[in-house]
Image 1 (cartoon, rainbow, N blue to C red):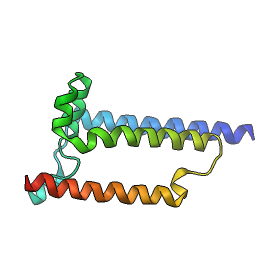
Image 2 (image 1 turned 90 degrees about the horizontal axis):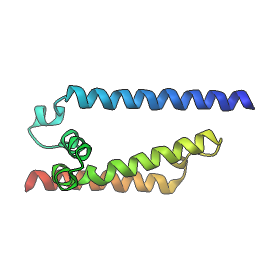
Image 3 (image 1 turned 30 degrees about the horizontal axis):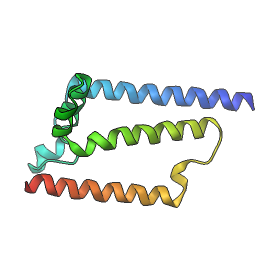
Image 4 (image 1 turned 180 degrees about the horizontal axis):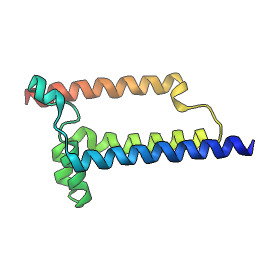
Length: 122
Protein backbone atom coordinates (compact mmCIF):
# COMPACT_ATOMS: atom_id res chain seq x y z
CA UNK A 1 0.00 0.00 0.00
CA UNK A 2 2.84 2.36 0.86
CA UNK A 3 4.51 1.75 -2.51
CA UNK A 4 1.28 2.70 -4.29
CA UNK A 5 1.20 5.97 -2.36
CA UNK A 6 4.86 6.67 -3.19
CA UNK A 7 4.17 6.00 -6.87
CA UNK A 8 1.21 8.36 -6.77
CA UNK A 9 3.29 11.09 -5.12
CA UNK A 10 6.02 10.65 -7.75
CA UNK A 11 3.46 10.77 -10.55
CA UNK A 12 1.88 13.94 -9.17
CA UNK A 13 5.28 15.59 -8.66
CA UNK A 14 6.28 14.73 -12.22
CA UNK A 15 3.02 15.99 -13.75
CA UNK A 16 3.03 19.25 -11.77
CA UNK A 17 6.68 19.81 -12.69
CA UNK A 18 5.91 19.27 -16.38
CA UNK A 19 2.93 21.63 -16.14
CA UNK A 20 5.07 24.29 -14.44
CA UNK A 21 7.77 23.95 -17.10
CA UNK A 22 5.21 24.28 -19.89
CA UNK A 23 3.75 27.40 -18.28
CA UNK A 24 7.20 28.90 -17.76
CA UNK A 25 8.13 28.16 -21.38
CA UNK A 26 4.91 29.77 -22.62
CA UNK A 27 5.58 32.89 -20.57
CA UNK A 28 9.20 33.05 -21.68
CA UNK A 29 8.69 32.24 -25.37
CA UNK A 30 5.37 34.09 -25.77
CA UNK A 31 4.14 32.02 -28.69
CA UNK A 32 1.58 33.68 -30.97
CA UNK A 33 -2.00 32.49 -30.99
CA UNK A 34 -2.39 30.04 -33.86
CA UNK A 35 -6.12 30.69 -34.17
CA UNK A 36 -5.46 34.40 -34.56
CA UNK A 37 -2.68 33.76 -37.08
CA UNK A 38 -4.72 31.37 -39.22
CA UNK A 39 -8.24 32.78 -38.94
CA UNK A 40 -7.63 36.39 -37.90
CA UNK A 41 -9.98 36.24 -34.92
CA UNK A 42 -9.37 36.30 -31.18
CA UNK A 43 -9.71 32.95 -29.44
CA UNK A 44 -11.09 32.74 -25.88
CA UNK A 45 -7.54 32.53 -24.52
CA UNK A 46 -6.02 35.44 -26.48
CA UNK A 47 -4.46 37.88 -24.05
CA UNK A 48 -3.82 35.30 -21.34
CA UNK A 49 -0.04 35.76 -21.41
CA UNK A 50 -0.41 39.51 -21.05
CA UNK A 51 -2.97 38.93 -18.31
CA UNK A 52 -0.54 36.74 -16.35
CA UNK A 53 2.22 39.35 -16.64
CA UNK A 54 -0.16 42.00 -15.33
CA UNK A 55 -1.15 39.73 -12.45
CA UNK A 56 2.50 39.23 -11.60
CA UNK A 57 2.72 43.04 -11.30
CA UNK A 58 -0.48 43.02 -9.18
CA UNK A 59 -2.33 45.03 -11.86
CA UNK A 60 -5.68 43.31 -11.40
CA UNK A 61 -7.72 45.83 -13.41
CA UNK A 62 -5.30 45.57 -16.32
CA UNK A 63 -5.30 41.77 -16.10
CA UNK A 64 -9.09 41.72 -16.20
CA UNK A 65 -9.06 44.03 -19.22
CA UNK A 66 -6.68 41.70 -21.10
CA UNK A 67 -8.96 38.67 -20.79
CA UNK A 68 -11.95 38.69 -18.43
CA UNK A 69 -12.78 35.03 -19.07
CA UNK A 70 -9.35 33.68 -18.18
CA UNK A 71 -9.12 36.07 -15.23
CA UNK A 72 -11.74 33.88 -13.54
CA UNK A 73 -11.27 30.59 -15.37
CA UNK A 74 -7.56 30.03 -14.63
CA UNK A 75 -7.92 30.28 -10.82
CA UNK A 76 -10.97 27.99 -10.99
CA UNK A 77 -9.00 25.50 -13.11
CA UNK A 78 -6.12 25.66 -10.62
CA UNK A 79 -8.49 24.89 -7.73
CA UNK A 80 -9.99 22.00 -9.71
CA UNK A 81 -6.53 20.62 -10.54
CA UNK A 82 -5.49 20.88 -6.89
CA UNK A 83 -8.68 19.08 -5.78
CA UNK A 84 -8.10 16.33 -8.36
CA UNK A 85 -4.52 15.98 -7.14
CA UNK A 86 -5.62 15.57 -3.53
CA UNK A 87 -8.29 13.05 -4.52
CA UNK A 88 -5.75 11.08 -6.58
CA UNK A 89 -3.25 11.02 -3.72
CA UNK A 90 -5.94 9.76 -1.34
CA UNK A 91 -7.03 7.07 -3.81
CA UNK A 92 -10.52 8.52 -4.26
CA UNK A 93 -12.62 8.65 -7.41
CA UNK A 94 -11.76 11.55 -9.72
CA UNK A 95 -14.15 14.48 -9.77
CA UNK A 96 -14.21 14.21 -13.56
CA UNK A 97 -15.88 10.81 -13.18
CA UNK A 98 -19.08 12.45 -11.92
CA UNK A 99 -21.78 13.60 -14.38
CA UNK A 100 -21.97 17.01 -12.70
CA UNK A 101 -18.34 17.64 -13.61
CA UNK A 102 -19.08 16.97 -17.27
CA UNK A 103 -22.02 19.35 -17.08
CA UNK A 104 -19.68 21.98 -15.62
CA UNK A 105 -17.14 21.34 -18.40
CA UNK A 106 -19.90 21.73 -20.99
CA UNK A 107 -21.05 24.99 -19.38
CA UNK A 108 -17.50 26.37 -19.34
CA UNK A 109 -17.06 25.38 -22.99
CA UNK A 110 -20.32 27.12 -23.92
CA UNK A 111 -19.25 30.23 -21.99
CA UNK A 112 -15.88 30.16 -23.77
CA UNK A 113 -17.54 29.95 -27.19
CA UNK A 114 -19.96 32.75 -26.32
CA UNK A 115 -17.05 34.87 -25.05
CA UNK A 116 -15.09 34.25 -28.26
CA UNK A 117 -18.04 35.32 -30.39
CA UNK A 118 -18.72 38.37 -28.20
CA UNK A 119 -15.14 39.63 -28.16
CA UNK A 120 -14.83 39.31 -31.93
CA UNK A 121 -18.09 41.17 -32.55
CA UNK A 122 -17.29 44.03 -30.17
